[in-house]
Amino acid sequence: MVSQLFDGSVEFSYFGRDAREVRLSGEFNAWDESGVSMRSDGTGWWRVRVSLPAGEYRFKYVVDGEWVADYASYGVENDGMGGWNSVLMVEGAEVFELEQRAVRTAA
Image (cartoon, rainbow, N blue to C red; front, side, top):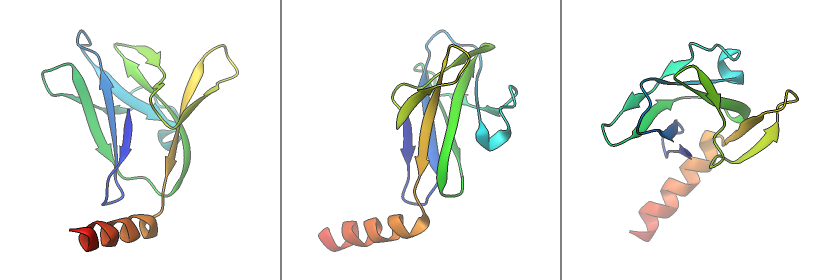
């Protein structure tokens, strides 16, 4: 699951109760298997927050050495090798400034 927060950062969340290690990897780090370490919250959810420039990215989680797509992301597409990549759309900061103003106005 992927959420873009009001500050523009992106939170990646993966549920894997039995996972021992979860990492994030994708176009933003040249598909480096060592990726970005995610932290377990003790309930089975693994999370990490990263800042990325606006754009479209492909990514996967590396769960105990196995590459796993996130089907709850913005979409998935065939990776050309018999698997699936998750798709992430990061909005620019101006979109979030407008949303924050709308939230403040409504409050």
